Image 1 (tube, one colour):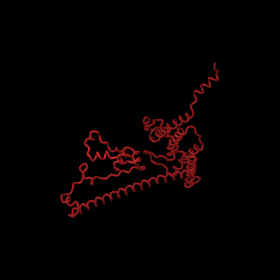
Image 2 (tube, rainbow, N blue to C red; image 1 turned 135 degrees about the vertical axis):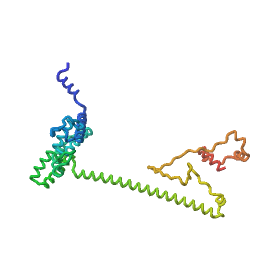
Image 3 (cartoon, rainbow, N blue to C red; image 1 turned 120 degrees about the horizontal axis):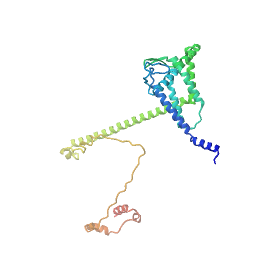
Image 4 (cartoon, rainbow, N blue to C red; image 1 turned 180 degrees about the vertical axis):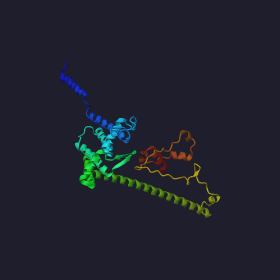
Amino acid sequence: MATKAEKQESKRARLELPPGKGEELLGLVLLTLAVLLAVSLVSYHPRDPSLLHASSEPGRVRNLIGPVGAQGAALAFGLLGLPALLLPVLLALSGWRSLRHGRSERSPLRLVGALVVLASLPALLQETVGAISWRGWLFDTGGAFGKMLGEVLQTRLNLAGTVLVLVAVVLIGTALAIQTTLGEVLRKWRERFATGWGRLRLARERRRERRSKEKSRRRVVAKHLQRVLEEKQARSEDPAAPGAAAAEAGPAEPPRLAGRPVADLPLRVVERKGEGGFAVRRAAGPRRPSSSSSSSTSPAAARRARRPSTCSPRARSRPAWMKTSWCASAS
């Protein structure tokens, strides 16, 4: 009989998730929360009933997530202001990282950097932007927290010092959140911009080259047709020139295709990428005369047939179709 410890160990083994499955479930939960929070923030209406606002229509909720979404959006906007829109973005990035990388080392500095940005950005927006109108209501861009922090800093540093300090703190928090130096970020963006600009210039040069080739082709075709017309006019004006009788009889009708002259049809050039190639096609050799046609051969052909072969041993060793043409030419 199994002991109690063995039974508990077997139950614990059944409840354990496969490696990486916990991170996957966590990523799905974070992505779901990010979507719910984003929809509730986007559909926020100041007249919805919440803890911060008593509505005259308590039964009517305009938020797409319902009363829960209205409460969450009111608390987020009332506390942080516009920087509350960063919350679903941060949750989505964290969830995507969990789904993509699975079990990876979590850096606490990322969380510290995100908190620093969320703490300093409301005060910066409140001091620089102030209040804005949102669906008929005055809305503080920094929320209650940003307004309070901005007033505390402004009493000691004035407006210019407060803005400089908040900008520096926001940059520090961003550097901690992305875990790379600002120089590397700028270098990567500069490389991407240079690559995109190079591709754009290459595409423009290729279009210009195709246009110049098309103009050159049309110019050559026009010169050729003009030369042909001049030669026809010269032959028709000179009665002693060969073909004058045909010119007097009347100009020949140019060949037509689908009811239109071939010279008037639009020319189309198709450019195909890649290296050029060639093909080898096997051609059938001359057929041997059949027995039925041997009786109708001429005497000269019969004498040539009775003539001894002049093919060299090297010619006899060649394939049948080459040997036939070679011996025929030699005879």
